[in-house]
Length: 244
Image (cartoon, rainbow, N blue to C red; front, side, top):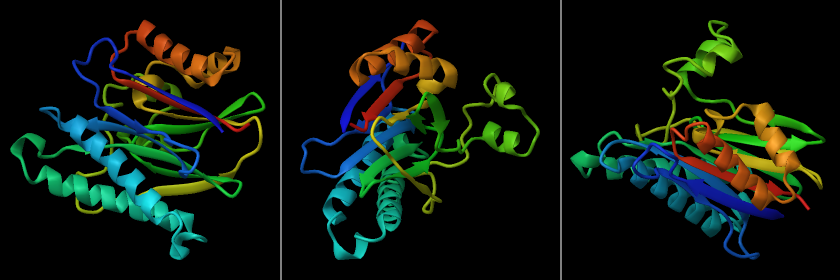
């Protein structure tokens, strides 16, 4: 795997409430995480950092356990549950952190499959043979309205409530986690990103930028730059993974 990550504050927000994780060495699980925090008084930063720390730590600790060898989905679910519990309990310890939460989207590569775990509206994509496919569905109000046929895909891009999410880590003592898996092959490119990217760039533009770049590092830089050029209204985090 060839991979990179790029996170940027953007041009409007005073701080960066996104957090991410990529493998630190070749002996670690091929795990990638993007989290986008929410909450006042820097609570969003706390929530996203806790999500990344708890999920990555749980998976790395339990990865080789016999109980999870044949059930990667269960491992991911339990990691999300552990993170949700940590964030929720932490939010009760301080008025400043009350109500904080975060999105979390991960990709875990194992035995020829990529497992996607997802809560919130950060996204995972797969680019294969020139086609960009969104692997997650947004846990947001406008996405729900689109599925109900009350909004079109075009209308949700500009809806005034497009940033209202319906599911997040840490806002309740329980959370539902979406988990899916896909076979991957050489040449596939996977993208994890916060909505600071997808609210600025549509899927076609994202695909064009990735395909026109000569490396995943260059592609990540150009994606962040393009989002900033269009206003950079939110924090922008991008992870790209090329299956080599």
